Length: 176
Image (cartoon, rainbow, N blue to C red):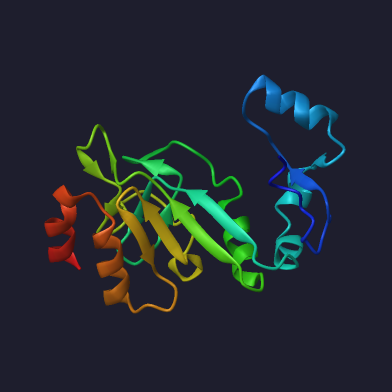
């Protein structure tokens, strides 16, 4: 049964548009032979104007860390660059400009085998803000969903503390 059809999109109706595909041999065969799959350049798939023209465009981004304001770092860890921005900012802006769109950031609550919280009071010195807080609607961890859109700084801190690992909540709560 086909679940994703692209039939309700305003742009590229009926097409599944992608810049990259990662998965099984079966997925690669499907993408290579299906007329419903359209591989495009990043200049197209990351074009904010195209994303904005899609109703209910939801961007799902990953992160290294998120601070209690909702600022997202997807690039630096302990002072070293470990990734590039990819399309994170493009997709966050596209979702923000889309009617009904949402920017969702998903990450595990901890790193280092549970030694480090990925929800932090402030972003680490030497890191960067990959996605500004104003663009982030939701942050998701295995402990729940923090709803940030339209919230005050204090409310954002409470929401984010609630989805961090329980071992770190007291420390985060004290710093908010």
